[in-house]
Image (cartoon, rainbow, N blue to C red; front, top):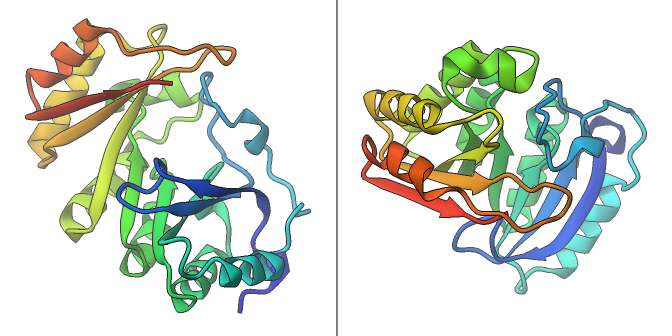
Length: 224
């Protein structure tokens, strides 16, 4: 089992029906992310730290008690691939009999390549057109995201490509450019997530959905 010190777990959602499509799951939130997207819903998980509020061994004990009640476990963040112990944690979860999912922004394509064989599903966040990444993430990362997208598409693994739509950053032209590039790379489906502002409900404008739908056969919108 993974050494507790090698995975900084910031929190746990014990039950979800929406974070791992088709499965009843728990979500393990990993601390730390090198990007600083202005709309980040989990901004408190951005700073890296070494102290974990939850010990991995305790979480595994809890997961053992959930066998037969949950179908899967999804690792989210933050950016889970930042954690040096992620690969071992994925193996621990699989050995407990759960399906394994990963939410990632594709920041570390080499690390993603290493763990893909241990995954059943990937939720890959596409921040926007690759040429606009620096403005959105305030740290660049377009080349890494593009490489990660290629890995996921070529792997054949079940996945979801999604983009959080902050209308201060993404307009119809940006969504059209993004969808066109995704289609060129072989993607067929994109989920547009509304940007949540101060806890208020929101929806992606129809004009933006239509702009993306000009290039991809499946474009869905998801409320905040």
